[in-house]
Picture 1 (cartoon, helix red, strand yellow):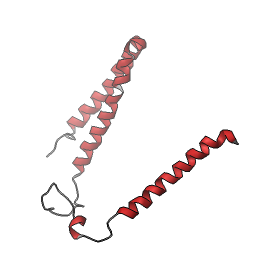
Picture 2 (cartoon, rainbow, N blue to C red):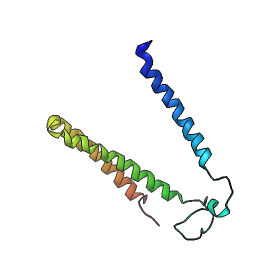
Picture 3 (cartoon, rainbow, N blue to C red):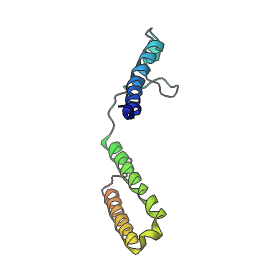
Picture 4 (cartoon, rainbow, N blue to C red):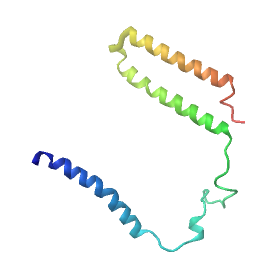
Length: 117
């Protein structure tokens, strides 16, 4: 049972930390309602319109494309670090990988997914 003591301590701290954080946040929060504090903040400019306004679907398409291509380029770093160890096979795999990315990028470009307006 003694060998499990560090695990039990860790579980106790893991359970106590979120509870203590919520109690402290509840204790130090302001208790009075303030209309100014509840308004949306837009860089010092008075808010214009509803904060829950609809965005065009094009915004989401560009955001998803950015995330996809950004995450895919992360795979280039480990390949570049181990380039010599991977040899010709690793180079061929990366050419295929980049080819697929270029085809996807060309498709998105041709469909007009990268246009803002």
